[in-house]
Image (cartoon, rainbow, N blue to C red):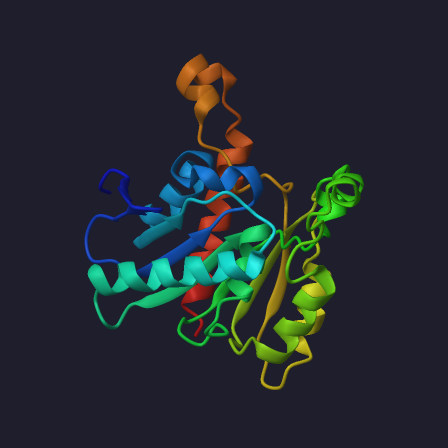
Length: 242
């Protein structure tokens, strides 16, 4: 594969040979600012299976709809500037908050071949940032995400049109909310969404191998690498069932 390259707010990775498709990735929380590092091993495992990678670098804010719109525009612009083969698959892939941003895309998921949602998280701002409610009252600023958690689920149920969604939750993930999301998706007519559970925790997709890089082989956790390889294989296999 080629080295990582930065294109404005997007980081790109190209596989060797003819690509099987394009993955547009949005990470979660503080990890999202440097996806080429925070999610390096996972995204490179996907690239090794033939996927082109476009990953958005951003800092989460309160207006999630605005950020969803911004990500959608950036991905679209880069696809137009660097088009791949016309017959390849386009997948949207999100982790934690990144799932929500993909689900809020202004096209309602129509212009892709499916969404893979890892560890969907839709908590309120006050739960995500415990001292926020007090600060919001004191300084009179917005102390909830827009849309709110309940508004998000209502919007997904009424406006999200992509039938093919793979929801992945991890067995030791204590903040995953994929169960609520799958209920909303499957209530739509013609839905083909599935929910699977894999070994791991909320941070299973996120590892850049920095401990190995700085401390050597002894500091690495081979089980986490195996978990990411299994996840990349599951996503690739699911993409071929359309």
